[in-house]
Image (cartoon, rainbow, N blue to C red; front, side, top):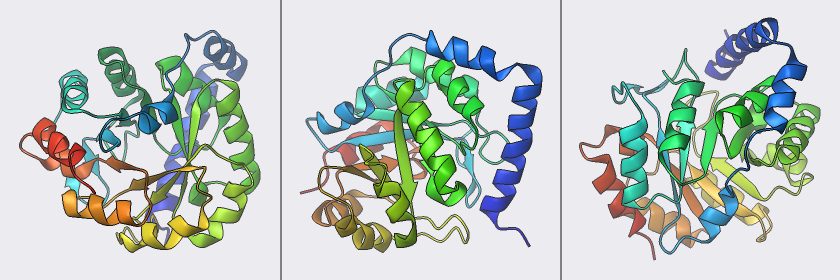
Length: 262
């Protein structure tokens, strides 16, 4: 039986095939290279005057189902910016998370914050597509990529002036990731095979990452006490999605979390 991650990746490869079938990759590349300058994702987190939070827009999740119905992501993006988000994350996967690349373009156009494309990136054409849509950063998931794929997509992202946010969950993934000397590493507290969440994942992995690399804690962050605990463990910034999307007032919840910590 396939894991959830394997099922997502199988679907993603079919999507990639359709992108390449619809348009020659060289055409994607040429348009990406001519895209306007991006916004500095890491600098936005390091320069925050409060708790640096990447606020995420996602309609649903595999583990929790529908989180929030959105016809237009623009109001949510603006509410996050007004509430103090340091950056945005937009989930663009359609079949499993209800998002789209158009969501990213709309959110990016509505705010002055840098925007991360959160998806399962497995092919260069998706990196080109991300840059064309306005992404300032892309997520590269170690569990979804061979080391050679990771190196190639990492270099391509850098070459297109985007920040590659490299995500890990297990200690076994760190060696290949650290060889890249990435500016930022995301530690996902959710196991993508089992979907179980454990904040101790951040606590365990943080000491294994050199201090010069910004570390982004992802998944399972629900309240100020979680942020305070993870800050104590050395986590630098936080990506928060489901907690905000389920909240009656996402902006107010985000403002509360931005003031949390120690």
